[in-house]
Image (tube, rainbow, N blue to C red; front, side):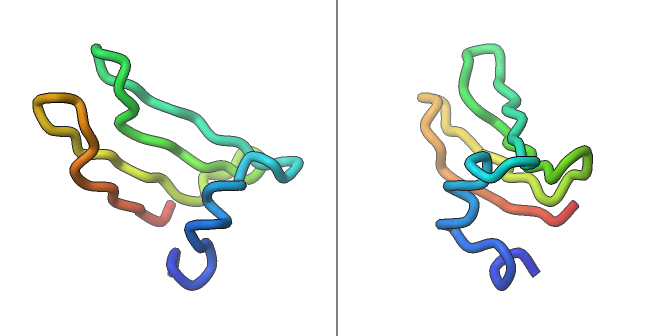
Length: 65
């Protein structure tokens, strides 16, 4: 379970640990719509961002790999 294993603090500092990385996806306006978190070449989890018409984040959803 994401909440038990990867807290908000862990997600915030994910890429500060060697061997871990993040990949950002953006929409046509440059807004982040997804962040995929990797450990080595393996996807660990992803965060999906729902935006309103102004490009502001209204929802963040985290999903297991």
